[in-house]
Length: 285
Length: 274
Image 1 (cartoon, rainbow over the protein chains, first blue to last red):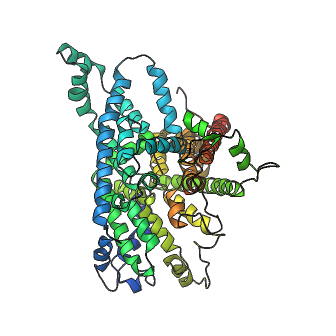
Image 2: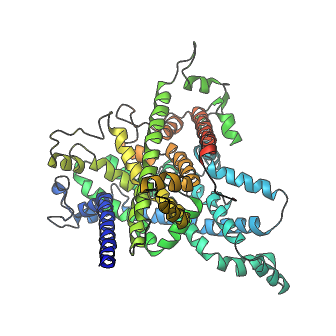
């Protein structure tokens, strides 16, 4: 009898726990859900309707929003955002992994010092370098191009990912390299054929976070892109917000929802890499 | 970096070459002297940011730890829950969410509608009232507690179960266990989370920019440090001054981190043989 009691109690407490988590979770997600539903509401009911189910369903917000304002619509903004994000991802994967390989496996003069320097740059507030970078790129005539976003990535400036990849490569057995050398592989072949395929999980984490950070980055895009035809999605949203009256909140919401879609897709398709990435590097709130 | 240090001692507007002016930028920042007027807006932005950091970061960590402890048991749907609780963090930095926030907390926004529904007849206009504007940003920051939560969760799972078993045999209750086992066991992680969150909170920009419409209002109540830096550097074209601000920020973050390490020296336990 007491055995049964104990079982019932554990069951009850587990149901209760799940319930608590779901209720808090729902409360937390409410703003996002409301945004989603508001994007389907007709303009005059958006603000007076706190419910999550639109009374009158409409797609007008999406149609109107997509056109954007002025000559440039959100097709342009999305295209620009994708160009910047995908190029950044490519550059980070190639150059951060090369750098990480060097730190993890090769010997060169000053390796320890450089590694320490790299770790310090991880802790540094980005604002310290923002201004000199801007001055430099301005001198190169790179304002209003995508170069300021892509070229620095070629120098493997995202220390977080290098650190992540270094840690990962160090965890791989050295015997692999040694046997590859015996089989006649050069350094680059070892990197490309042996280590990279094994580093895929860490590389996926790199891909995910690079994409998300670039996609959501507002500050740098605000600095370097001032011509509307180069605007990215965040800048487009801001332009929309500044220049439109109360009537177009629906469209603004619709475009906001669209801007979040790529993040959602990535997150849910590759969730476990997220957790790993956060747990190893502690990034970022 | 060195160049930025150099610029911080100059007067520089991108169009003309920098002009050496010594400590002038720094003097202006911290109250000025007989010949130079101090920059009150700078001091204000510093205090706004400090308030933001020291309210939002501890709240965020407490919230993250509480949720992590609720979730730290054998639940079938743990993967799903963790994902759901991470969503705000995933999306929170984007312009879209800031736009949403601005709308939710507007005078005729949804938050006020809900407040009226539960009987608060005349709620304030959160975004446009200088008294409350900062608190909406703090709520937005605390809402994104996903990363520290996941790190706490990993940390909780590393605390050996035997500690809890042994202590309950010795008659320790849950509260006692929390203070004697959980907190000491997590202390390095708490420190780590604190430093990470503090560093990123000091640099918060997007939220303040979008929610205040780009000028830190109302009455500079949401003038974050980085927003002011942006306005100075790019709005007023005072790159030298902005560089000096960046350096002051670096020093503030650096010394706060050092202080955190120092204070925690006695409190953080790294376990037996690490």
